[in-house]
Image: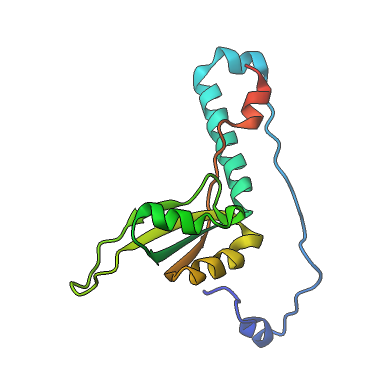
Length: 157
């Protein structure tokens, strides 16, 4: 049976949605520091879990924008894209040459990938369009890892 996505089944069965969520919950990870220090396998598992949770939470506020930009060189495209430093991404754009599928295309094209905060996504799309950007795709970032897991570092083991 398919879920009631359109509300049709709810209407057919004379059902109504009452109120909001029944339960909101959160999880807590509880561990004994000496046990973690003594057991490298468990410590590794805890680190992996904390890394994934933190990176997923961090990623919720970012979008990845990919666009094809015409230009003379990677440096040319990089300079033009980064004229708006607030739209240059976490550490800067990733730029790679494109292989043209058309033998008649003499203009070099480059793929530019930038990760920006959600609230800057449309601003970035407009900026890339102003540079001749085409074939743009935007996806929600799944994970953003930092230099280390802050929660795991706080365990101090």
